[in-house]
Image (cartoon, rainbow, N blue to C red; front, side):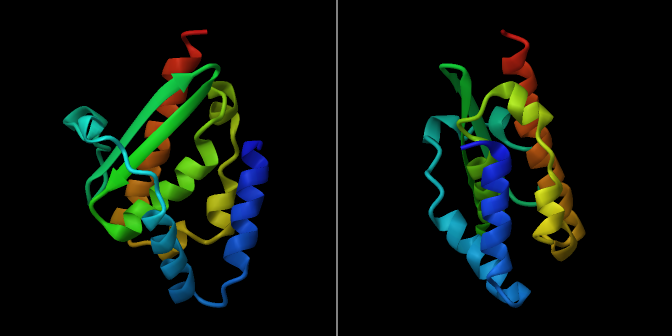
Length: 139
């Protein structure tokens, strides 16, 4: 599935909810279903700087795609990284670098997060793009 298609799917899912309490619950639910990162990857190197809570992100290249795993010690943050992983995992580095991130504004995520969580979201995206940049330069 292409990044744009996944993003449209996420926007559709969020549009089913009438209020933000339901959306927060949905984000938390997504976090509960996040495949766990291996303990060996919960290192200082994989910790995302700029997040209020602890978020670990690990990416590895499989064939010509990047596969991400992540975890967080906060339930809402875990849901946020789950949305990003669903969007960008199993995608080509070049596609990740070229991806439009408008879907985040479309679902209203940034405006409904505290300033520190919104900064964390930006840091998560930056880290995903850094992996893509690193793997893209290996081609």
